[in-house]
Every structure is written in structure tokens, then in C-alpha cells.
Length: 277
Length: 273
Image (cartoon, rainbow over all chains, first blue to last red; front, side):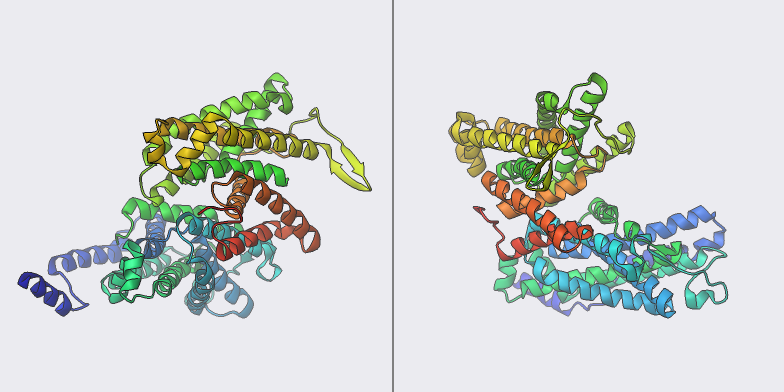
């Protein structure tokens, strides 16, 4: 009994910023290696590959926040990818707002949409939730195909701007800049999810996943926290859509809201182990 | 169309009611049955009407194989595994169909049933009408089989309580295989009738499986009459919505129905859960 209370005390006193020295060194070396990677003059394809790895890792992480922490299986994560891509492209094409702010707008809209979708459908369980997200994902695709303001089914073409690569976030000479942007998001996302994992919110979410009745009896507001997890997940997904839009310079509903994105994300996360960062 | 949705949904509903697995590959099974009808016509000149029995046998065999090789292994695992398995099956079937049949749109030319009726100035396509009739007949047969015959009641017993049924000497594994066979036979009938007037191509199943999910949710998972009525409702919603508002948003009305039903009455209209 004494032993347990000592452990509890230890767990309580353990700071949020707890680092294991060895793992810190290993992570530091990996990050440094990734930062130095473009200097080893790799081929264009290698950089493209690494970028895709980062993007998909972040997307999988986003799905993981929802499935791993709150236990809901979403088949419609392409919604937030598409919203991120469209927000960024739309505000650049129509109002010439720099994509850097476009990304933030995309995150905001995506979170808001997640809240709107999440409030009704997060009450559903299991298969019903999965099918609902699948249907909503396809509905978004249909709506964007028919919406003239965002270019209907031919999508939005981002005009090429050669004068100011930084403000328009277009780098035509090399892919290295895109590489660093996606690497940055990769690191930030992983850090945030790691924090989430250790924070009170993370523990509450996992309690909900494991036993929602028990969690609610302990005073955890189940539906509120599920919606929070959904919003966080959506917000992680959106910037990747924006970066992808800036990378390929065209957004069309068939690609941006593709069901395959949702499935791919699910597959990556499942292979890596659900609930595992 | 509603009756075809209903029949597809009945197959899905049967499988779900029996073992609580949602068959995400249902639409792709439909695609296989349409292709089977198409190839029987293309190679042997057999009209889809007459090839229904062959298609049923093919689909039932596929259903049994699916059960023994995939479903039996995931029966007791978590929902995530089940979703991944059937979704993966769907993607695999679609990809294989694209590989072997190429993604071309095909039609059956000059089927036995074609032309249209005119009733009070409304044109009704003959293939559609006959398709609904055949589906209705199949529905009645399905209903009679499940409620009146001994095997059918055994099927119901298994779906209600697996363990109790096993104690009474009903082999649940065989029942599951039978459930898959029947579920996919429904799809076979629907697919053959559909191939009379619809394009045949590898992605054809996607929309139909989505509609089937909606119909099943609407009718209540596991209820056969429920899915009949729900299928008709969906057919009506689809065409009336297309007529009154805008045909390009057809899918959305149906999805809206799903969300509404699932949120307001999660057990469906006739559901028992």
C-alpha cells in the first residue's frame, strides 16, 4: 500500500516536461540528421519521398489522435485535408493572402468544421460513426464539385508567382524548401501529440477510450472530450492539405477529398499501432 | 431503383444481423455479380435474366469463401480489425477488377427486356420495372426462407444468441457461411437485374454500397422488412430530391437521411437494438 502511494506521489510530481536523457539524445541526432539531409545532395526523388513520408506521418498522427485517444474510427479524414488545401488555395487566389496565413485560416476552418460535424456524430458508436464519417467525406467531395465559387470540379489553380517565393510559398527551383516546411510540421506535430499524450487531456481521452462509462462516472465529460479530440485531429490534418496544395499548385475535389486519403491514413496508423505515437 | 437498393441492403443487413460485421465490400460484391452477368452475356450470349441462377451460385460460392478465409478469423476481434478487413477486401476486389476487366464502362447491348411503358403520360423503363418485380419476388422468397423454413429459423436463432444456438446443436460457423451465401445471393439478383440497364465498371459498387449502408441504418441493422421499406424510402428520396431541388446533389439527400435517422433514432425504424 505504501509502495503504491509512493508511486502515485512520484507520478504526481513528475513534470510535464519530463525527458529521458538517452532518448533525448537519440531524437536530437535523428532531427539533426533530417535537417542536414538536403545537404548530402540527394536526388530530387529522395527529397520528394522524404516529404511524402513526413506528410503521411503527420496525417496518420492526426487520425491517431482521434482513434488512439478516443477510440472512434474515422473513415473521412480527407475532409480536413481538403479543407486545408482549399482554404489555402482559395484565399491566395481570391484575396492574395499569403499561404502562411492561409494555413492558419485552414486550421481554424477545419477545427470549426470538425466541431460542427463532431457535435452530432460523435454520439454515434462504432460502425455507425465510421459509416457516418465516410458519407460526410463523400458529401464534401460532392459539394465542392458543384460549388462554382471554388472552381467546381476542375478545382483551383494556384497562379505561379516567381518574384516572391517566400510570401507566396512557392519554390520552383528546388524542393528543399518544401522539405523543410514539411519537416517543421512533422516535428511540431509529433511534439504536440507527445505533449498531449502526457497531459491531463491525454489521460482523460484514453480513459474514455478504454471505458467511457467509468470515465464519465469519474466526472469526465465524455462527449466534450471526444469533440476536443476530433477538433485537435482535424487541426493537425489541415496544414498538410495546405502544404500539399502549395506543392502541387492545384486543388481539385477529386484529389483533395479523395476517400483513398482517408483509407491510406487509417492504414498507416493501424500498421504503426493505434494509440502509439 | 428503391427495390434494388432494398435487396442489396437486405443482404448487408442479414450479414450484419448475423455476426455484427459490416461488410464494407458489399458494393464490390455487387460489382462482381454485375460483371458475372456481363461476361455470361458477352461470352455465351446468355441474357441476364437467364443467368441469374448461375450468378447466384457464383456469388454464394464467393460468400462462403469470404467467410472461411477472412471473416471466420476476425469474428471475435475488435471493430477496427473488422472494418480494416472488409474495407481492405473492398479495395482489393476493386483493384483486381480494374486489373482484369480494365476500368472501361460496358453495357449489355440488346438485352431481352428493353423499351418502355407509358402510363398516364409517365414513361417507365421496362428494365427498371422488371428489375423491381424480380427484386420483390426475391425479397418475398428471402423473407419466407428466413421466417418459415427450419434453416431460416436456425439462422435467426444464431443471430439472436450465438451461444444458446450452439447449445441447441446449431453449428454457428455453418450458419455464418450460409448467411454470407444468402447475403451475396441477394446481391447477385440485384446485380444481374441492374446490369440490364446500368453501366458495368469496376467502381460501380461504391455508390450502391453507400446507399445500402443508409438503407440498413434506416431500416435497423438486422431487420429484413426494415431494409425493404428503407430501400424504397431511399429510392423515393433520391428521385424526388433530384426532381424538386437539384439532381446533381442526389447523393447528399440520401446521406442527410442517414445522418438524420442515425442521430434521431439510432436503432432505425424497425431496429431491435
